[in-house]
Length: 159
Figure 1 (cartoon, rainbow, N blue to C red):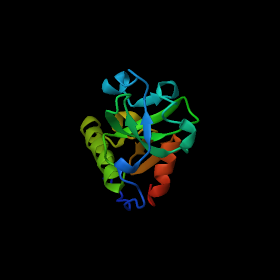
Figure 2 (figure 1 turned 135 degrees about the vertical axis):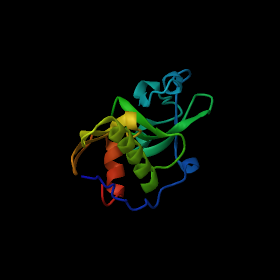
Figure 3 (figure 1 turned 60 degrees about the vertical axis):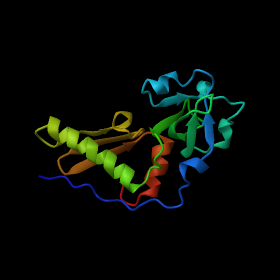
């Protein structure tokens, strides 16, 4: 029994990364991101330069270290302790981005499991923070756990 990834429609009306508002970190609060962590906690944000309340849950932002060094692109939830989750270095999430991340996860799981019964998407570890997908043969069960992923979902007709 095969598994088919449904192609999704491309997103429209998304700003380029350079046009996104900045989420500036306090001095030395980029250490965890440099080590590969994907979460940004609200107490790590320089709220003098970045007012968290200007963001709506799920908004995109450019993450900048205190010295203006670019850290990547994230979605923000100002109402959460984990106020941002890094998505990528600088590619705006679109249909190709989503499909590529799912394909990578699928190839890995198909190498590891003889039968198609497994967790296909493990959120952050598969580069899709806030998304869990469990596969039961030809059926997938999707769980969305963040405002940012919920907002992404609304941009795709088939997710």
